[in-house]
Image 1 (cartoon, rainbow, N blue to C red):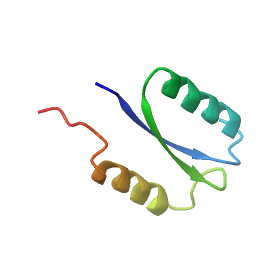
Image 2: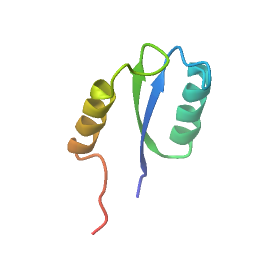
Image 3: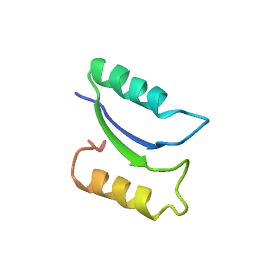
Length: 68
């Protein structure tokens, strides 16, 4: 079974720079995980609307295996 991971990150985040997120994505993919990344242009979203819509689309796309 291939694990699926969703990551939400900010391009201008100073706490977790984009390069670290990109490294994590690579490590997870190299380990065999399917990774979906939602990037915000700033540090964090002004509202959660866009990240939540992205997460909802990710879940609704059927890419997450739900346990019975």
